Amino acid sequence: MIPPSYFYTFDVPEFGLVGYYYPNINWEGAPAVVQRDVFLTAGEVLPTPYSIIWQGKILVEQPGLYKFGLNSDDGSMLYLDERLVVDNGGSHGARYVEGSINLSGGYHDIELRYFQEGGSRELELWWTLPEGKRELIPPTILFPWEGEVPARQAEAAQIATPPAGAVADSLWRVWGEGAEMQPRGVAVSPVTGWVYVSDAASRRVQVFDRAGELLFAARCWPRGANMARGRASSISPPTWPWGQTARYT
Image 1: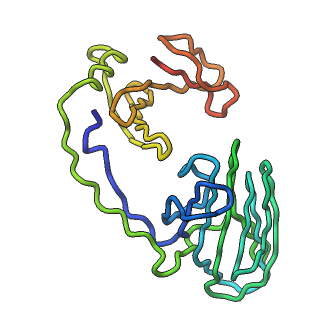
Image 2: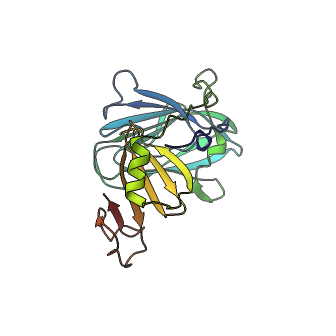
């Protein structure tokens, strides 16, 4: 069982935009999730198909002509002060589109729309400053509208450790008696609810279901390394950039 000491919370920076996540590609109906996002990415908050609207303010320190660019898969659109500046809409693979606008110094309304219909996903928001420097828009100049920020996450509650049971037995069966286990991180999938625990000693990621049952463990080797050890079967193509992943049952 995962010890309570490995669960923690951290302060969220005051910048970022408020994201409204919809379980369709048309931004229709009530959002299923509302949260403040420091980084604007095509993440996995909802299963596909889904769409997102981010809203807030962008701080412009230098007045002048700005170019904004969207690289996305699938569609995306950028509005500044209620004006459509970049239209990269439609269902398509990764594609980059730019638009220009004159901006005065100070805060401006910003709205970014994105949808993902299925398959691969990607989203990048760029700008080119008046002096010609091109960069990803830094999150430190994006701010939520006052009153639109979801409540700050509460401190994590103390979790009572239940008695050892099926999970401990499953771990023993996988790693054997006396195996060292050194958990270093915990993540929870918002889609499946599975719990992923990285273990430094065994160099594996342990995957549990919502009930705490061990599903499998996975290890990642560099591309081209020998995987023929233990009871393993490949669950990812060797062309992936992180190499092949082995699944242990």
